[in-house]
Image (tube, rainbow, N blue to C red; front, side, top):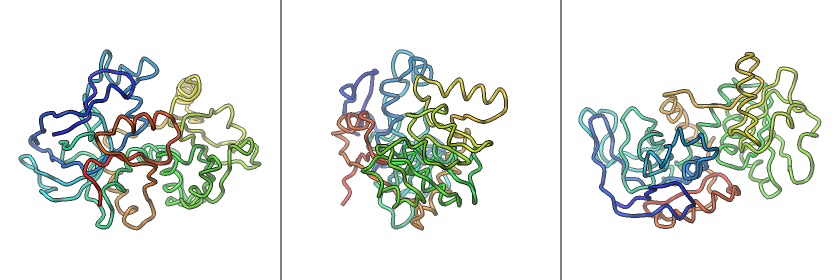
Length: 325
């Protein structure tokens, strides 16, 4: 099978599409014929780990896994012994386990009890590779206990995490203010944001309103800049370490003092399957939709990495492993 193979850290040029052995499903595993996947911030961070201690996660001298790709949508090719949930021909979507080889390939094996489930009937494969960003967004919203009557400001509401956060927060009943660049104002409104702020037109922290929650979906602002936006018991959350890695010590101090004022959300272990199953009815009903920036073929995946590394993508960048009609 063809796969995008990474044998060392470096720029997108180290990603090579080549022939490798097709995996065989072991007991309790499902072999998927991959139709679509994505190149995400996570993949780029895995390609060039920064800061250096990130290599403790991805591999000290070289990547622990040679095929990246978290999001996946495809058809069940075959199943291993003991699999009862899925059968050949089923259309499924979800995520690949983080420590195993991923979906940047024509085939991938995933445990039956892993974070995959059946695709909604009318959803295209390239519209279903939305789970990774949505999982991070949802982890933050769940830690916030976002619900009806709450107000939340989402900074960077045009990326994979941000577009998901706006839609999920609305689904939970919150009033959402989205902060985006000028070119994304209409997108944010179309996703259900109640208020939209153009951060290029002025200082978004001077909006004159206070919020229950502020979610930095891109890791480019800080608690110190945003604290004036918070109500007295409001909370700040960032999906990244933030400028000068400041969110990490702040989150640690908040945890030690039990104030929960600053948090870096991490999905609870084993929560992926439950979340993917909860996302399915939202996709089916149109309450949640994919925002697709660009599409690439597998043999052009290095170009996808180059684009994602610019930090300017909107929503997700799709890799069509099988051509979509």
